[in-house]
Length: 289
Image 1 (cartoon, rainbow, N blue to C red):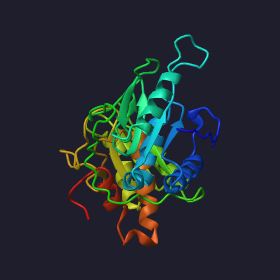
Image 2 (image 1 turned 120 degrees about the vertical axis):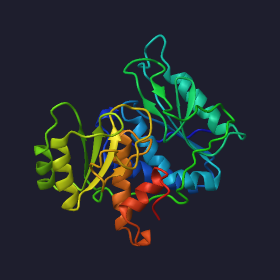
Image 3 (image 1 turned 90 degrees about the vertical axis):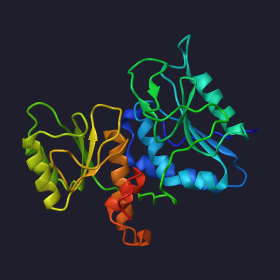
């Protein structure tokens, strides 16, 4: 197949921005609608790859499956001039996956010779060539079938560059305090993701600040700093009962999901769904509309 190269940006992925996500999302939607394009491979730095992968899954994953095309995100752990550079192999496998007519359509990641569902891939090692894992999901072989169980039957709207909702991550730890939360409110933060301990638990001092944040209209999602496992919809000790559990999403990915849910809830086409309804669909909770 002929390959066309387009460079959207050239940055260290630790400097990735919401503005670039919006631009990338729009480019993907345009490319997926283009009848002359059979598939897309995105090269991306590994530090924030998992966040971009989830974003793409949520804003154009349904479209990709509908039009029968694949979007593959890939990258490298070693520089291109390293004698054991992994980038070429990852890129070749990504292109092969696009060309494989027997492989399922949708959004996928390729790293370390493995194929991942976009929403489940996560970087869990700072330097290993096998730095990425698939969370609680199963890696895919070329030609394997993707069964993500998602309840989302349409893509979420892509926020314009200046319409992203501000969401910050706060980590629970020994001696966690809540004074930063009041500061965040003065800065216009609309949502917070708690990187909780264990199954999303929270220190009682931090809990007080988060409860006040929700009472003032702030959106709160509980995730975990652990990295694997699902977060329950409610904590057994009753704390933060008005918050949402992040399901299988780690804090950085839960942040992207919350940002998109908050924006979608403001969209006129959202049929009056709340951000909680939309977020619940993302994380596959059954008890919301």
